Amino acid sequence: MDLGVEAIYLNPVFASTANHRYHTVDYFQVDPILGGNEALRYLLEVAHAHGVRVILDGVFNHTGRGFFAFQHLMENGEQSPYRDWYHVKGFPLKAYTAHPNYEAWWGNPELPKLKVETPAVREYLLAVAEHWIRFGVDGWRLDVPNEIPDPTFWREFRQRVKGANPEAYIVGEIWEEADPWLQGDMFDAVMNYPLARAVLGFVGGEALDRDLAAQTGLGRIEPLQALAFSHRLEDLFGRYRPEVVRAQMNLLTSHDTPRLLSLMRGSVERARLALALLFLLPGNPTVYYGEEVGMAGGKDPENRGGMVWEEARWQKDLLETVKRLARLRKEHPALRTAPYLRIYAQDGHLAFARGPHLAVVNASPHPFRQDFPLHGVFPRGGRAVDLLSGEVCTPQGGRLCGPVLPPFSLALWREA
Image 1 (cartoon, helix red, strand yellow):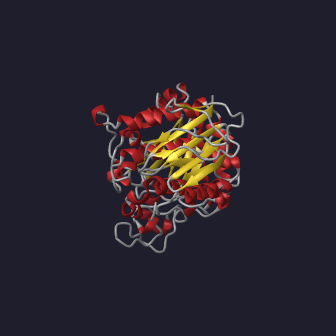
Image 2 (cartoon, one colour):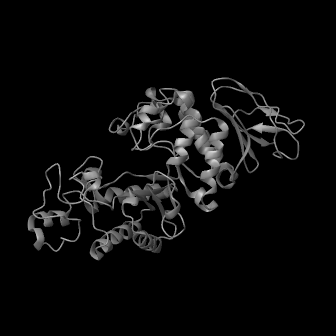
Image 3 (cartoon, helix red, strand yellow):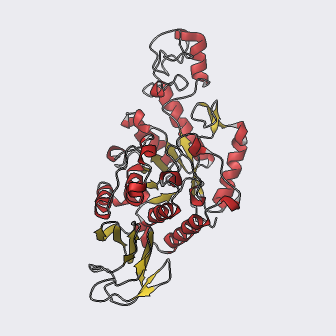
């Protein structure tokens, strides 16, 4: 709990034929390997007792071949009452060949695509969504929702979920800008991969392993200087309503990307700065398990290894950074609610305000003296304190006049 965690997003937990459980065979049964439904109930009780919410991964675009409807369809062909549950191109089904005769996710025969326009399929999935919310789950992360391009389905999904719990959180896996899904009638937020690319490009710069990133959904990430980075942020924050910006699932990495330390080619300093910056931008900072202690990993499956529990192998500096920034974010409401305002941006140096706070970022390999115009920040003209280092400075002549900031570090100033 000293990490300041307020919510846990779990990858799929339902019964499945794959270890990652994206091949669902029973949407109403938690995989017995994980302890079954009672284990999830216990987790919810303990998490809620500590003020932590739990979000499940909803895989509604496709099922596994072991799902009851697909099994019946394989056994009974055109006579099956489930013949309209999938996009079948012919009978008998060719489910164990390289080229299935039905639509499947990315052509993978193990993942037959559901026909969501079929009323029975639609109702089944909506019932699943509502069931687990009433069970006590606090929200859904939706897997590849863009591959169900029917907005009426997602509007119904929202109505059923919010009807069961108005406070439930609905976040979609959308890798690019997500305007259509964030108009208040479908999702509350999306996984903010555009922000991840921006932060990685700014902090990682030329040192970022761009070839590794390009082999995943992150794509080719170009190095960004401070002004270009700020413009990217301003575009992201400006395209959505303020309440959506605050609700966004901000992240740097996930189970679908290489791990942060690997992207930064082992640079703990750059990884630390990226994590710290994540907590100071508008939106909900989300840390992929193990990033807080410096786990490494390239493409899937290297990025999905078991948690490192031996503390001797932890990067304690990263862990302390996450703890400190999470605590500050909780103690200072403006870091959660105030808009982003650029104050200074040049080369690898950026300063931005969040309400009464001024964050100064040095994303360069050289020391940076914090001496630049404040443009109205700290209007009282009194002393300012860095909430991270404890250092104090007195702005003069409308300039910060702060101390030297070491390479790949940041300060968080507030008037004393």
